[in-house]
Length: 275
Image 1 (cartoon, rainbow, N blue to C red):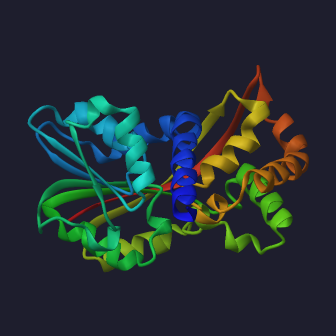
Image 2 (cartoon, rainbow, N blue to C red):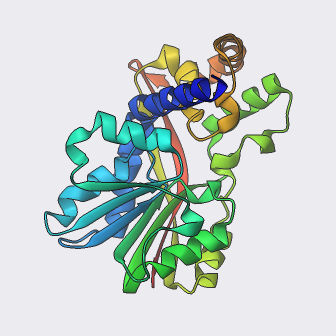
């Protein structure tokens, strides 16, 4: 029964992630990643940490009928939402459950590997980077986006500080999405995986949310898709957390609302390299 409850909670978190965070954040960031990745007609592309598939879906028309897109993710709930809510793409995208540190494909199988906001979550980043390099054909490309630090992303810094205060834990325990913000470390990681022509670019982009009054609630529910600790909270705990955090960030949110839309900048590092 507990496993069933956990699975259901994970699926609901993935649904909120797709319905709230994808249109609020990733619809604005995905084009910036793909502009640098430059998928071409006929190419085979692997999207690592594909989540609910916003990058993979965007690549499909770029590679065309003769191309191939594979979405890899360790979270079965994310993949289930990807296929359920975008059934028309299930024939176009090969969804695979698996680890970035052990990519289930042969050497030199892809022309391009993309990874949007996944690398910071991997338990073994060097191994994951080596695996991305392994599955790329000679002169194949990789394009990776990771958020810069919480200090650079001030809106989420305020939000995560409030969460840490309510949980009574160090902010480092929950800042994983923003824990790989050093561009030098990202460059060294890719060089260490034997990539060439490594370039790391600092990119700023505004994100937009129209459900201002539910921003904290939906953020907490959506973040549960990538931070398992949030999945384990029952409805009462989530409600209490939402109320306390909303009070903490109310002034900050109000200062970023224009014409009924919550808008604030986010900063990421986007790395490109050649195998």
